[in-house]
Image (cartoon, rainbow, N blue to C red; front, side, top):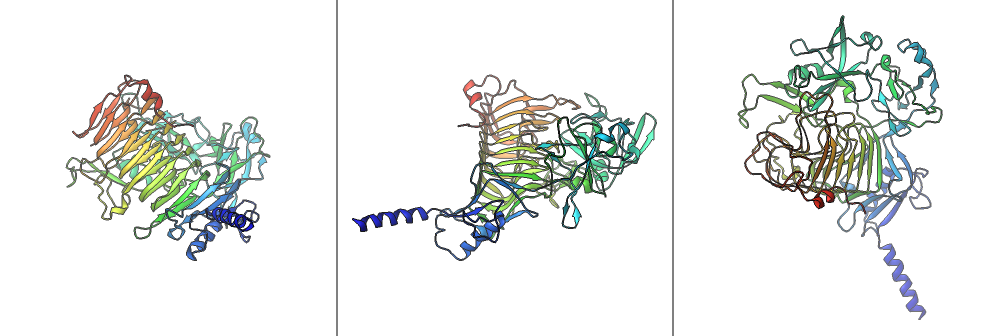
Length: 613
């Protein structure tokens, strides 16, 4: 009897230990500790190294996986978390990075700004405001002060000092490509003619530009503005999109920003260069002696990097918060995008149109990929589930190239400066963007990816031309039951290339999503937007609502579903929207439309969006 009892207890203990081995991490831990529950590590990178060693040495007990458990708190590091093929799990033995309590463990790329002092005697600030401004030195990173374009005060994103309140603009007078100038009404906000770090935000149809001001020439009621290179040449040479003069609803708009002379409203801030000092005008009720002020230190918080020969595989993130990532490139070279937030390296109008791949092409463009807080290349069987992505300057999560059998589910993306979630190849650098992409290696194409039951809201709040979910060259992508809302441009965008030719894109599904409150600032937008030929693809059972009348649009081109150039191969069926407002730009002949608009059954309308248990 005793022997039987002992065997039963032993079997039970063996069964329990047959589950995934655990490594424990706490913000209050020690990387020299044992990594157990009683003596946890302090950093996630140390835990990953331990898991890597267990796999390298084939330690017993890992047959059912390795789980890295993160206790509640904030995990900060001065470098991105790096996951490589040596961290790989298997289908039977994945590596799981999991929060002990969902969304209570935060992997953070930010650093605190402390020691605020009230009052400022800088003559660039109006005398009546100087006592209201608080000042702090930027924190140090190594031997340099941190430069930033983003700041959060008590969790809320502060607005960089601007000519007008957030989202407000003024109509320009002239756009002059020959001498690379923009003519505007002479500003009345302080002495901006000597402001060293001044920038101009330019509304140009379906994108914005951020241009660093080189000089301003006062001509009485008008002022002529010139800009720094390299953005000046690109801005005035590229034909699409450019600002509009004499549009149906007026000229294109602009706003000046990023000068201490413009710091005149509660909630605004400015960082001076080269002193690094940060100036802030607190909102009512904010006590800067107690406030938590965070600026981002890193543009990338997490990097998953495999190769075609050795991909990353079977890595899961569960219940983790990712917060505070930077976006700095506009401070160094401006920002002139083509579409979807993709910056132009070079672009110009062709004097004689046509390429072998596209006889009607009248311009060429070369792009680069926007920065992203979490990136993955050449990875399969990766998972992000019940995670929270917020307070990011550019793209939130970017599945760049060579991703397959991946899943992003039950996550929240909010307060994202660029695109919330990006998937697939957008050929960049030396690859002209209108040429169909046909990768020599089949592994390059992103395929069989599930984007399910996520909330994407308040994305594109810094680069208005970014989108909620953006996919380029993809195959077998399933975007289902997501809620995508509060966006300055389009909601769900799938496709790239502007081409009817076969490019590998196929079998993509956009189904049962709820897209609303989009096109808040820009136009030529779609709640669901597609490009190019994508055979055997579907847009079904979606709800698309609350298309916003963008206040500075120069025409009314915005749609609930938009088939942009050469879209083909889709079945579009049973999509509810309040009116049959659909856009078409040279679509192909092989798409099928059926029963889309306000007549769609109420059950389909109310079944779209997230499934909340």
